[in-house]
Image (cartoon, rainbow, N blue to C red; front, side, top):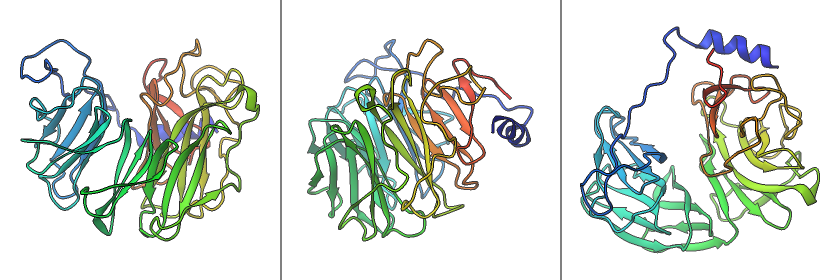
Length: 340
């Protein structure tokens, strides 16, 4: 419950446990290096697997930024690029730090020279939600997008559109790349569905045992979700879902958990959505202000610690943390939060 989570967080926290803005701070007029006042919200970020000092991020204002010193300083690398709106996904090639992929302007772009030049390689007419490399074959790449699931087997030269319903997220089993997880929209049933592949994406199976279904279909709404895995417990899978299962859920459904690589599911908190209590009294709405205002998938993300499969963070209008495998969670950043 909440008090166990509170105790664990105190044990895990240092006395200097504070948040510091590390940028990027400057935004620029489209197509130039001229500073202009604009929102600097970061939509997407990735870190090199070859050099942990190298990161890139995509912003709401459309800029792609790069750092070579682990976020102490940032450089705009998209001033001459053709994209100009929100960059919803970025990825650094796992074997080549000069190759980046970014999703923006309803397209997928690629650079082979660390951002000096960019080429459009796919027109989706929709947003890219995730760019995921096969751990065993870097030429095999999935795009989870608002226009479905895309796959390339040749590093981006050509793509196949496997599904056309929105795919919110895709992830691999941490130690077995044959097992792949996908979260896909079902507009008719007003929910996100979990699919599992045991053959590296050649075939996909819908998983239903213990999985979420809306409590009142006529009042339900689907906003999406994110998948989380951890090498600490490779067979653990979490899915954080946003949306509504019934009236007054106000954007929050919950975090589902599997301990057998996505075959069976439970809801550790024991409750879908509301009714709610105040922040940090379980259960409370992790996705909305007290007024019920929330932003759905727009600013949503979810990550599980690679060192502790019970520890996870999910960002909505605030940053939330669970340290007990999604049984409970606390608010640790932004609106209505309590620092512990």
